[in-house]
Length: 114
Image (cartoon, rainbow, N blue to C red; front, side, top):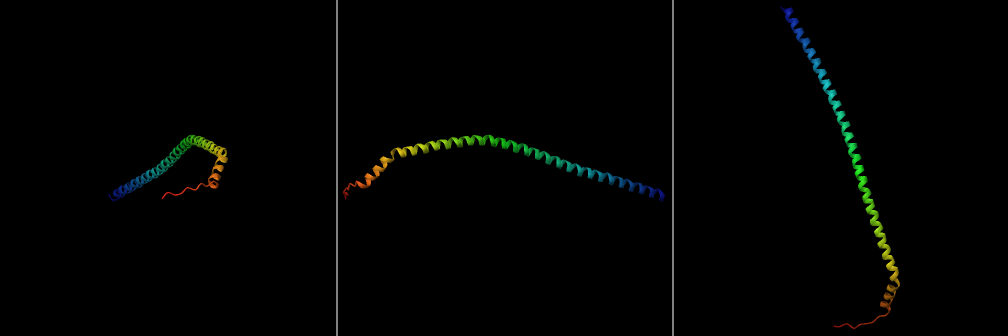
C-alpha cells in the first residue's frame, strides 16, 4: 500500500509540475502579448499623431496665406496714405513756413482786458 501511495503522490507531483509549466507558459504568452499590444498601440498613436500634425500644418499653411495677403494689403494701404501725407506736406510746405514766419515776425500786440 505504501508503494501505491508513493506512486499516487509521485503522480500528483508530476501533475503539479506540469500544471506549473502550463501556468508559466501562459504567463510568458500573456507578457509577450501585452508587449506586442503596447508596441502596436505606440505605432497607432504615432501614426495618428503624424496624421494630425500633417492636417494641422495644412490648415496652418492655408490660413497663414490669407493672413499674409491681408498683411500685404494693409502695408500697401499704409504706404499709399504715407505717400499722400508727404505729398500734402510738400504741397503746402511753403504756405506753412510763410504763415509761421508771419506769426513770429508780424507781432500785433493786443491789450489785455481786465
